[in-house]
Image 1 (cartoon, rainbow over the protein chains, first blue to last red):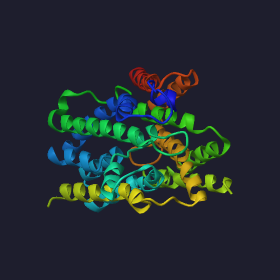
Image 2 (cartoon, helix red, strand yellow):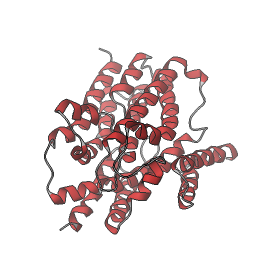
Image 3 (tube, helix red, strand yellow):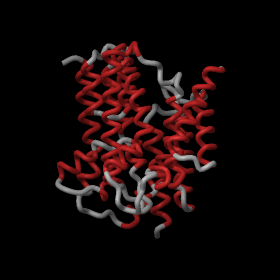
Image 4 (cartoon, one colour):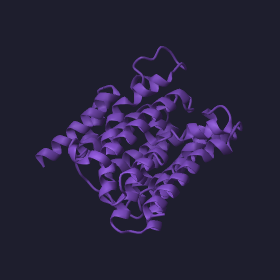
Length: 230
Length: 103
């Protein structure tokens, strides 16, 4: 993990916010480009210019935002859009539970830090002992929030100027990122089993459910950890 | 309020609440050992699911096989060669872009 996320590591345990920014920099480029395409799509879907930017700051979760824009744009109805987005973001429930032990301070600071959790920042902040590195999470989360929101504004206000991120292959950057972050995680048999189980659950459910459900259901694969610790 | 702003506000508030729930509910409380062990296996389970859904997911659910799969294979090769993260991601993006140019 250290090799992947932090080429400047000086030793275990001492990471700074800047280390988090550095670790997230490559994926920040992709977040910026996809922010632009969200801004363009949202504006084309009739969301205007301000609402998509407000959404990027407050919701800060790409897949849910794309779902809302595409459903509203296709005339799919308000309730459908909201349900789809909430389903897509339900995975942050178990993710938040797993992160809780790594947070410090009064309730409002814990709640605020939790807003910087997205798949990418959470994955980058994983430590070898199964906890989260709060500094890496905040640094990575802030950089991604800035890139995502700036991209959205760029797309909503000046979208015609920018290339399509898919033609640049940037949509392939995300599965590769998650694979690279998964790699050091599967260091024993029970974690390998959890990974295989999560992938299998997602694969089986994908043809039958809307997006969002397979990822939430895949979190059940973490129960192999409870079974083994007996 | 328009449908657009209602969706922005409702989805925003719901997401903020979902993200904050765990850290607020579990404040200063350590979960029992078996629950803790399960939570430590959440990262590999969810990351593997994200690899699958991000590489194969279609716009409206279901599977879509496209250049992302070639990109992922290139990323996996870079990983096997012990390339750093930036190179893994770049290899995936460049490969997918090239496949789209050729196809």
